[in-house]
Image (tube, rainbow, N blue to C red; front, side, top):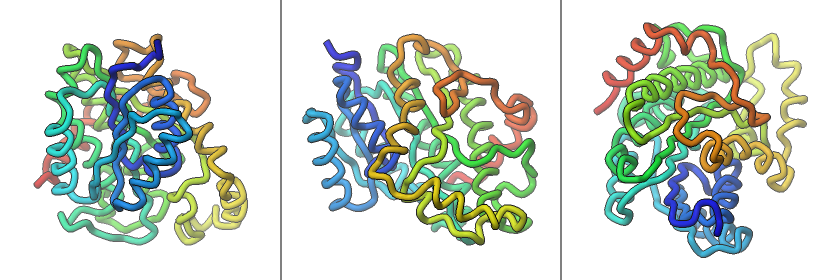
Length: 290
């Protein structure tokens, strides 16, 4: 029997890149996998390709605009109508906007997609997760982790700074999801975080030189070389940490973990472990919810 037969997995932003590779691997293990995408044609093509690669028909899709809270709520509603429970939620979708932008909700785009969306979707699907024997929530982070974040600049209130803004939202996300892990400790839901490492994805292809800090811009050609299109090879490698947290027996029932690109459990950043930091980020998210 395949390891994940009868399990239902929802993966956001999985029509390409790391999410798509994760979907394929979990489908090969027997899971029913639902991917999300913004475009019907793209989603249908991804489903067809994953089915062929995984030799599985248990792949479906749901359309969602995860940059808006309305879109996240609609996704949760659509999922709940079609499925009775949820075993694994993988918050894979992310944003690395190259300029300061706001969503229709008035939230800076990176903060909206990278912090609010995984929190809100997890919250909306908690009851479905509780219906699973042992549910897992996995959220992907990315970028170079800063040692600290200005808690008064979470939405670029003091200025937008390219990849630094992106990285700041990712550590803010870690604060939220680690706090969530503490709050869900007495339930059947585990909440863990992973870092996939660099890969050639649509997001990395959209990174521009002006998103790099001034001192690092001379290294931009190296970054582009490392993330040049490679037919999914690097994305497949980067998906290992997500797959591990979604399916490995050795992490069953374990929560608050941080897994690196080498699929090793490593300590969380000190900034995330400080309860007051988590509290402030959590409060910022609550204020931003519509």
